[in-house]
Image: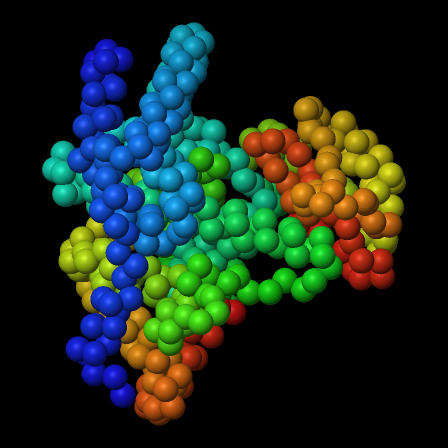
Length: 246
Length: 185
């Protein structure tokens, strides 16, 4: 069995140790990164300046507006409503699919906690929107203070558009129930109809291709919902296999 | 505060902390992804500057906490993208191969690659980033006691994997694998 000292030594020796040049704040790469951060900060500042006077017209809006621009859409909404992360106790995070129209993030993690982490769920769980650009939903053990503790904002539920998307997901699954091969033209037609039906303005579908630009296969399925880009990516499905709906 | 002052404040924060934030990212991802991650870290930090700790050391830990989440999101997007490509190729969804998993790596790298994300991150913070238990607790947002327990278990599990790889039998091995199975289920 490895001794403690030997294990420590091997762990330290495995450090890839980035060189001095790679981490130099005066290196050209660092200068480019700083310029990029400044550009984004200025752009964000302009957006905030435009937004705040508009929101000042409403009493409740002022607080929301100044608190905005921190995570997700800045108002406690994720920009990635089809999945969530349950923040586990000891063994890392578990990412699960999510439907904001029919599911509650806390309940979803609680139901699957034992299965995912091998122990009962904590008595209190809290859903937050993390500080990544897309503001993913993360459920932490503990109360609301956990959001601040993890540099996140409390999750305030789905937007109207996300509820529309939730209904879309339910309806398209029901529409094609039992089918194992849906041709692209038929798939696109139904997508268009349901997008209009649920008020999902500006949304479109696209055929996901690699750089090789493969032609469409005989059957389609939904690969991924890209909310910031308002795009439903379709990919090829193998005829005869049951369709998995994201 | 006017635009010039804000610009200076951002530059000061960047210059004081860049070396450690970039090193943290480079230890966990490739150069291009690290540059993207660092830009995102300072972007988030700038938006949240009211929460920026006043001491330099605490500011670094705060930024490393942001970096950890930014990298996790990068990895998540990467996994999603990989799944998309695999589905297109009509293949089954395989487990995510971490950045350390590659041909020809030594047994420690292989054992680290098999560890859970949480174990791997804890070990890296302790042995690569050289953070104290208190500092690790701050970055991960957990108690020092939890750091001690998790670090102890992470080392045990790693040792069991290394011993198994080298043919040694360890009495804790079976238990450790069971614990890992729970996490990866």
